[in-house]
Image (cartoon, rainbow, N blue to C red; front, side):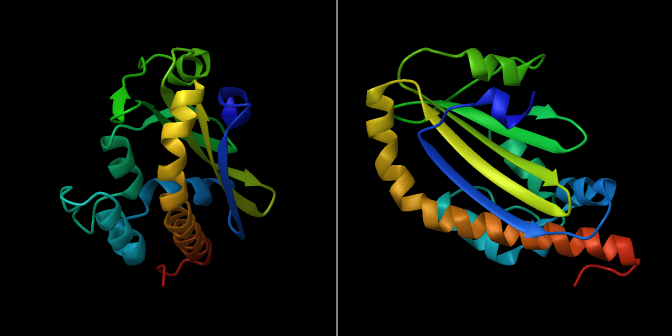
Length: 181
C-alpha cells in the first residue's frame, strides 16, 4: 500500500533524504536494528519533546521505541516501511488502529477532529528517503495542530536527518564488514 496510498493528501509534510551505498536488506535491517546509543542527539531531542517520559536504555532499538509510543507499522514492502498513529484533538489522545490492516484503517478514517500522522522510510535507488505526512480530518483539527507543527517542525527535521545519517552509517558498515562509527 505505501505512504502514497495511505495518506495521498496531507496538510503538513516533511521530507529528508540521504545517499546510502548498501543493499536493500542491509538498509532495512539498519532501520530496524538502530539503537538509541547510535543517535544520542536524537535521544536528547526526544527527551525534550516528551518531558517526563521513560528513559530508554541505550541498547533499545529506536523503531521499537516509536512503536511502543503508540505508533503502528501501517505497511511494509521491499522498498518502504510506513509507521503512523492517529490522535484526537484537542488533547492528542491516540486512536487505536486495528492490527489486521492498520494502513487501510488509517486511510479510511474520516471522523472529525483527528490528525493522521504517517512516516515512511523508502529506498529509491541509492537514496534513502524519510517522509512525514500529517492530515487533519477537519478544519478545527488543522487549526489545533498548526501551532504544534510550527514548534516541532525544525527539531523533528533534525531528528529525521540524524536518524537517516545513523541508518546510513550502520547499513554501509554492514556492507563493509566494519562496525558503525
